[in-house]
Image (cartoon, rainbow, N blue to C red; front, side):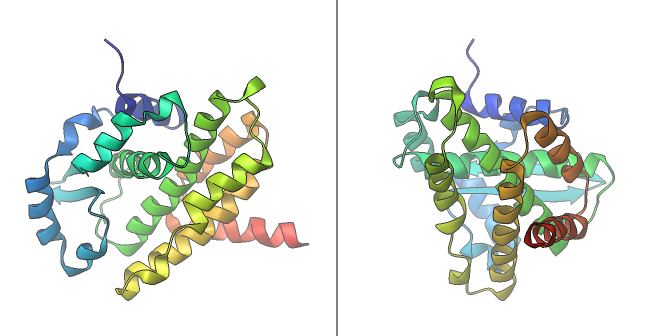
Length: 232
């Protein structure tokens, strides 16, 4: 039986970081359950994308995860499978698809390591920053697969950066907290991935594994220190 795109991406993240211990596809929810959880998530959740969302809930010292993808998003990925080629027609759908898997996986890994403040802003920013970094690396792999000698050009990287970072519009959020969250994490992820681009494969793997183990404030300090060093 062939692996699904979902399971392939989960396995990629687990090979990179650690096994989460569950099949995240079992956490997929339908539109009705998404609507119910969106109401429980509060007013600010109304501004989040209706195409893909990850819900986290803690009860009896257990973490419950729900991953939602709209029917439209799944149809786009089925019609334009990124495993057959990545372009303007499917890159945005792939970004949303990968980010939600990443949110769920890292939330579970952090919970297993002892993190319990899943409702805190730092926890949310940590997940968002990590997802943007990891998604950029996944996109690089997709692009490289279809290039001769698996070489990714500067043009390829600029194109990925446009869709993942420059095309985002955090300032459009009416909620001040969401606006600040996405403005900061997008800037940090853009800066950090530029640093990752300067490393060879082995050094990059060591770096991102060490980076994942940091909390949000530590990640932020790490990125700002790297940026400061680059200016000197």
